Image 1 (cartoon, each protein chain N blue to C red):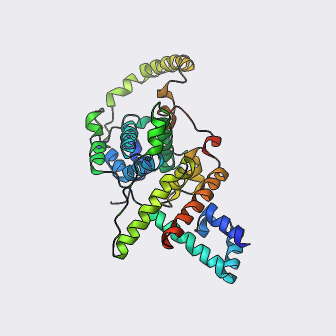
Image 2: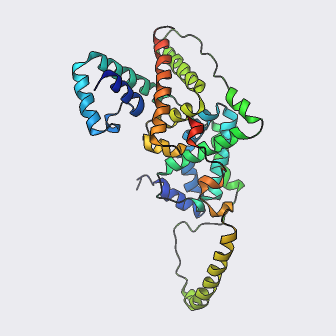
Length: 139
Length: 184
């Protein structure tokens, strides 16, 4: 491995050998053993990585308070907190429930074909945000 | 007792209306959501709005979350980035988000701590001057939580593209750090 290849490896994959391939680790280790310049560059990259890891931007206290307050401003149905009750009387309703469920399923399939692009039907990652950035826009 | 519940488990409880689980998610992830949004948008007020919007939707739409496709943090970062991009694209926002808020120039200090703080402030400003793609790539990887693969997934790009961004960003930041230590 040349110095330039090693520098590229540090910039591309970072300083953690765990992020390098087995072959890269082996070649990098041999280079580090024989080259003081490689060791200097590794130390420099480590320093940058350490400085970056130390950058902290905690959420301001007023933001945290507003986030904590979200459930109060958007009330939801009460949760049983893990306690389950066995609906003994529900057993008698299973037949009617199954028939109703089948009817709903068939209706839902028909409606779903019309409403596939409704926000409620898609993953939260896309329901909020309408655009996916293409790779070309990043580079 | 005392074992930390994973994020997928918390989200399932949030979907059932568990406020305590939601607040645990807030405590666990508010900093990283805010920090990533702040880095991408370079504007603290906008970043706070984004964070509030995301957590509100986490609470109200938790039943839409699909565990197992990716780590929760990878998915969360992707949501943050998409929110920031949409924010940036709103009419009138492109310029303000590019200008952002410039961190104040720290006063020179006599001791090592102040010098270290100055260095970090300059590094932080150097990150803010990076183009958006590089800035986002660095913001996703700087705390070493995400692998390159996960960061690429959060940005919806290939690993190769992410690494190209990281190479450029790290070269710029390395030069900024070298300037700092040489007094330039």
